[in-house]
Length: 399
Image (tube, rainbow, N blue to C red):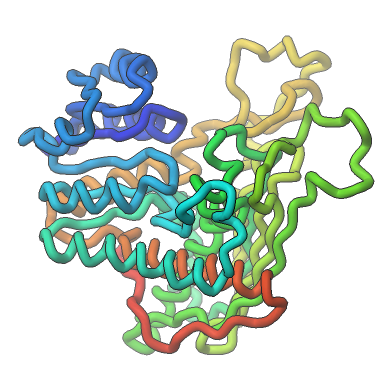
């Protein structure tokens, strides 16, 4: 039995707990949950039959019944918790982003030069990877979108086509996060680019790594990064008093980002991450090949469409993530967590640990995404294209 300890009791912890229960037939069970919010931890445990609630993280790490520590905590806690878990001989599931730069002081974190941020964020990722290596454990990187059925089908189509990936376009956008930690650089490490943009960027790195290994025996890596970022919620022309739809209480992070990547083979990737998008989650990915084109719509299916003249009509039924109103036409999700890859993600992590192999989304993918994102912050701050080092770790693609 693979015992799991969940750290955190919020949105993503709830998703993970539910899916672990559905994967019980694989021989996995959540044995305990730890959170600073004891009441929330107790509520999570009650919903999913988790036998223990632990008020102390050290107690969870000391349990002989727990082999995997699932970190569903704010970004600034990823590195310290992951390293402590590795030192205790526990495998780690770290939600995206793997890590980042958070600074020493809340009031000055966002003012740090982006070159320093890039160096420190990469050093943080390397410390996490080194700890896993030293203590003989694995880091599973929580990038669910590479496990989405649409992305996995796209991967198989790319392989079958024999074509070259010439361009990729991806976006994740919605109306903004209400999580308090997401508003400040000191706890989040960045804004929409680090929270949302990591998803399509991670998928792009994954697909090009696979293409390179099939063609040349090595990953095709990112060579240059060009980006712009902005806080569009503070534009001077914003109508007075109009605050009910888009989140506006960002402290010092961006809520819009656009990134252009150039890979070593000269091919391109264009990615958008926005917190000023109404109408529900926008999660799309496109692959343009030398002999084909593939479109993936990860958050909006036309299999079921619904209309209501009043938001109260469907009040008792969940429709879709980040939908501002249930009035009008909507596209109800037919299994949001499945279509967004969470089931396949946790299944792969469980089986990888049981089989002593690397998961498809490992710590090296997380590290490479951190490098690209903070290179994008540097590009945006200095108004130039950033060239990445030619040699650095390569992501693993095993699915």
